[in-house]
Length: 78
Image (cartoon, rainbow, N blue to C red; front, side, top):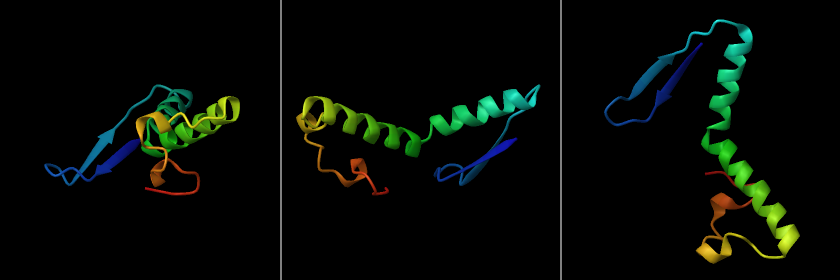
């Protein structure tokens, strides 16, 4: 399978090719790449932030002064 990445100044678009020995190995790579994405990490942060807030009654991001940033709010996108 291949992955195209755009947005770098030096290289407007770059294509990465992956080769796997099995369909299962291919699926493992795809899942690992999804878990490394910004959106997956953002959703995980929001989930755990809400869980901590339920347990402690405090916003864990408040101590860093970023609790009101829209990108860390549920239902908003960067």
